Length: 200
Ligand code: FES
Ligand code: FES
Image (tube, rainbow, N blue to C red):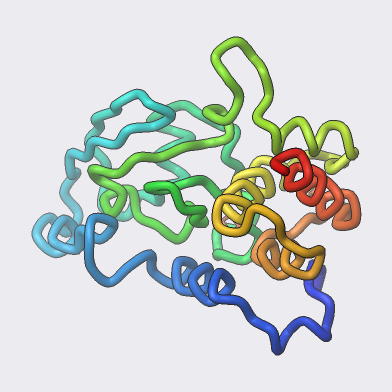
Protein backbone atom coordinates (compact mmCIF):
# COMPACT_ATOMS: atom_id res chain seq x y z
CA UNK A 1 0.00 0.00 0.00
CA UNK A 2 1.33 3.42 -0.86
CA UNK A 3 1.59 5.39 2.34
CA UNK A 4 3.13 8.72 3.26
CA UNK A 5 3.62 7.64 6.83
CA UNK A 6 6.88 6.31 8.14
CA UNK A 7 6.35 3.23 10.31
CA UNK A 8 7.89 4.95 13.29
CA UNK A 9 5.29 7.68 13.14
CA UNK A 10 2.29 5.47 13.73
CA UNK A 11 2.32 5.78 17.50
CA UNK A 12 2.45 9.57 17.38
CA UNK A 13 -0.98 9.87 15.84
CA UNK A 14 -2.02 13.51 15.95
CA UNK A 15 -5.34 15.05 16.86
CA UNK A 16 -5.65 16.08 13.25
CA UNK A 17 -5.24 12.48 12.12
CA UNK A 18 -7.90 11.30 14.56
CA UNK A 19 -10.28 14.02 13.36
CA UNK A 20 -9.54 13.21 9.73
CA UNK A 21 -10.38 9.58 10.41
CA UNK A 22 -13.64 10.58 12.01
CA UNK A 23 -14.54 12.78 9.06
CA UNK A 24 -13.91 9.94 6.71
CA UNK A 25 -16.36 7.74 8.56
CA UNK A 26 -19.03 10.39 9.01
CA UNK A 27 -18.44 14.14 9.17
CA UNK A 28 -20.11 14.93 12.45
CA UNK A 29 -22.80 13.56 14.67
CA UNK A 30 -24.40 16.93 15.28
CA UNK A 31 -24.30 20.47 14.00
CA UNK A 32 -24.64 21.94 10.55
CA UNK A 33 -22.96 19.16 8.58
CA UNK A 34 -25.48 16.46 9.34
CA UNK A 35 -29.00 16.65 7.98
CA UNK A 36 -30.21 13.16 8.65
CA UNK A 37 -33.81 14.35 8.46
CA UNK A 38 -33.35 14.84 4.75
CA UNK A 39 -32.49 11.21 4.37
CA UNK A 40 -35.10 9.89 6.79
CA UNK A 41 -38.00 12.02 5.61
CA UNK A 42 -37.52 11.86 1.91
CA UNK A 43 -35.98 8.44 1.39
CA UNK A 44 -35.61 8.30 -2.38
CA UNK A 45 -37.30 11.60 -3.27
CA UNK A 46 -35.14 14.45 -4.57
CA UNK A 47 -34.20 17.01 -1.93
CA UNK A 48 -33.46 20.67 -2.54
CA UNK A 49 -30.12 21.78 -1.16
CA UNK A 50 -28.30 25.08 -1.25
CA UNK A 51 -24.54 25.28 -0.85
CA UNK A 52 -22.02 28.02 -1.39
CA UNK A 53 -19.18 26.83 -3.60
CA UNK A 54 -16.17 29.10 -3.96
CA UNK A 55 -18.30 32.05 -2.93
CA UNK A 56 -21.20 31.35 -5.28
CA UNK A 57 -24.54 29.97 -4.00
CA UNK A 58 -25.95 26.93 -5.79
CA UNK A 59 -29.39 25.38 -5.34
CA UNK A 60 -30.28 22.01 -6.85
CA UNK A 61 -32.59 19.07 -6.33
CA UNK A 62 -30.50 15.99 -5.57
CA UNK A 63 -31.28 12.38 -4.79
CA UNK A 64 -30.45 11.59 -1.13
CA UNK A 65 -27.92 9.00 -2.28
CA UNK A 66 -25.88 11.57 -4.25
CA UNK A 67 -22.36 11.91 -2.93
CA UNK A 68 -20.96 15.38 -2.43
CA UNK A 69 -18.19 14.70 -4.93
CA UNK A 70 -20.79 13.71 -7.54
CA UNK A 71 -22.79 16.82 -6.74
CA UNK A 72 -19.76 19.10 -7.14
CA UNK A 73 -18.73 17.50 -10.41
CA UNK A 74 -22.09 16.82 -12.04
CA UNK A 75 -24.45 19.48 -10.67
CA UNK A 76 -22.10 22.39 -9.99
CA UNK A 77 -19.86 21.46 -12.93
CA UNK A 78 -16.50 21.76 -11.16
CA UNK A 79 -14.43 18.75 -12.17
CA UNK A 80 -11.17 19.65 -10.44
CA UNK A 81 -12.26 17.54 -7.48
CA UNK A 82 -11.36 14.05 -8.63
CA UNK A 83 -12.77 10.62 -7.83
CA UNK A 84 -10.03 8.09 -7.24
CA UNK A 85 -11.60 5.27 -5.28
CA UNK A 86 -15.10 6.21 -4.13
CA UNK A 87 -14.39 4.30 -0.93
CA UNK A 88 -12.71 6.96 1.26
CA UNK A 89 -9.22 5.55 0.70
CA UNK A 90 -7.35 7.89 -1.62
CA UNK A 91 -8.19 11.51 -0.79
CA UNK A 92 -8.43 12.56 -4.44
CA UNK A 93 -11.86 14.01 -3.68
CA UNK A 94 -10.68 16.25 -0.82
CA UNK A 95 -12.23 19.70 -0.55
CA UNK A 96 -12.93 22.18 2.22
CA UNK A 97 -16.30 21.97 3.93
CA UNK A 98 -16.87 24.87 6.31
CA UNK A 99 -13.12 25.40 6.33
CA UNK A 100 -12.05 21.83 7.02
CA UNK A 101 -10.68 19.28 4.59
CA UNK A 102 -13.02 16.33 4.04
CA UNK A 103 -13.15 13.51 1.56
CA UNK A 104 -16.21 14.43 -0.44
CA UNK A 105 -16.96 10.82 -1.40
CA UNK A 106 -17.72 10.21 2.27
CA UNK A 107 -20.31 12.99 2.52
CA UNK A 108 -23.78 12.96 1.02
CA UNK A 109 -24.75 16.10 -0.85
CA UNK A 110 -27.78 16.51 1.44
CA UNK A 111 -25.45 16.56 4.43
CA UNK A 112 -23.70 19.55 2.91
CA UNK A 113 -26.91 21.59 2.68
CA UNK A 114 -26.22 25.09 4.00
CA UNK A 115 -22.46 24.70 4.10
CA UNK A 116 -19.63 26.71 2.61
CA UNK A 117 -17.46 24.68 0.23
CA UNK A 118 -14.13 25.48 -1.33
CA UNK A 119 -12.75 23.40 -4.17
CA UNK A 120 -9.45 23.53 -6.01
CA UNK A 121 -11.04 25.91 -8.52
CA UNK A 122 -11.50 28.40 -5.69
CA UNK A 123 -7.90 28.41 -4.51
CA UNK A 124 -6.31 30.83 -6.99
CA UNK A 125 -7.14 34.53 -6.95
CA UNK A 126 -9.55 35.91 -9.52
CA UNK A 127 -6.60 37.30 -11.51
CA UNK A 128 -5.07 33.83 -11.79
CA UNK A 129 -2.46 34.25 -9.08
CA UNK A 130 -1.95 30.80 -7.61
CA UNK A 131 -2.56 30.05 -3.97
CA UNK A 132 0.80 29.77 -2.16
CA UNK A 133 0.27 26.02 -1.81
CA UNK A 134 -0.34 25.66 -5.55
CA UNK A 135 2.73 27.78 -6.22
CA UNK A 136 4.83 25.61 -3.91
CA UNK A 137 3.66 22.43 -5.66
CA UNK A 138 4.57 23.95 -9.01
CA UNK A 139 8.00 25.18 -7.90
CA UNK A 140 8.92 21.93 -6.13
CA UNK A 141 7.60 19.52 -8.75
CA UNK A 142 5.03 18.22 -6.30
CA UNK A 143 3.08 16.44 -9.00
CA UNK A 144 3.58 13.91 -11.72
CA UNK A 145 0.34 12.86 -13.44
CA UNK A 146 -1.49 15.38 -11.28
CA UNK A 147 -4.48 13.23 -10.45
CA UNK A 148 -3.98 13.38 -6.69
CA UNK A 149 -2.84 17.01 -6.75
CA UNK A 150 -6.12 18.86 -6.15
CA UNK A 151 -6.84 16.68 -3.13
CA UNK A 152 -3.28 17.03 -1.90
CA UNK A 153 -3.43 20.82 -2.19
CA UNK A 154 -6.75 21.00 -0.34
CA UNK A 155 -5.58 18.67 2.44
CA UNK A 156 -2.20 20.38 2.73
CA UNK A 157 -3.78 23.82 2.94
CA UNK A 158 -6.04 22.65 5.73
CA UNK A 159 -3.03 21.13 7.46
CA UNK A 160 -1.16 24.44 7.43
CA UNK A 161 -4.26 26.26 8.63
CA UNK A 162 -4.05 24.14 11.77
CA UNK A 163 -0.29 23.88 12.02
CA UNK A 164 1.47 26.67 10.06
CA UNK A 165 4.96 25.26 10.61
CA UNK A 166 4.81 21.48 10.68
CA UNK A 167 7.76 19.17 10.79
CA UNK A 168 8.29 16.74 7.92
CA UNK A 169 6.86 13.98 10.08
CA UNK A 170 3.78 16.08 10.83
CA UNK A 171 3.26 16.69 7.12
CA UNK A 172 3.50 12.99 6.40
CA UNK A 173 1.01 12.19 9.16
CA UNK A 174 -1.27 15.04 8.14
CA UNK A 175 -1.44 13.84 4.55
CA UNK A 176 -1.57 10.13 5.18
CA UNK A 177 -5.19 10.04 4.05
CA UNK A 178 -4.14 11.17 0.58
CA UNK A 179 -2.51 8.66 -1.75
CA UNK A 180 -0.39 9.38 -4.79
CA UNK A 181 -0.47 6.58 -7.32
CA UNK A 182 2.65 8.05 -8.92
CA UNK A 183 4.36 7.69 -5.51
CA UNK A 184 5.64 11.26 -5.69
CA UNK A 185 5.55 11.72 -1.96
CA UNK A 186 9.03 13.18 -1.53
CA UNK A 187 8.28 16.26 -3.59
CA UNK A 188 4.75 16.57 -2.23
CA UNK A 189 6.12 16.79 1.31
CA UNK A 190 8.84 19.14 0.07
CA UNK A 191 6.15 21.36 -1.48
CA UNK A 192 4.13 21.56 1.72
CA UNK A 193 7.22 22.40 3.76
CA UNK A 194 8.12 25.08 1.22
CA UNK A 195 4.63 26.57 1.50
CA UNK A 196 5.01 26.55 5.27
CA UNK A 197 8.37 28.34 4.98
CA UNK A 198 6.79 30.94 2.73
CA UNK A 199 4.33 31.64 5.53
CA UNK A 200 7.15 32.54 7.91
S1 FES B 1 -12.47 9.26 -4.16
FE1 FES B 1 -12.84 9.94 -2.15
S2 FES B 1 -11.24 9.10 -0.97
FE2 FES B 1 -10.90 8.28 -2.97
S1 FES C 1 0.94 12.82 -9.14
FE1 FES C 1 0.00 11.09 -10.08
S2 FES C 1 -1.34 10.38 -8.54
FE2 FES C 1 -0.12 11.81 -7.50
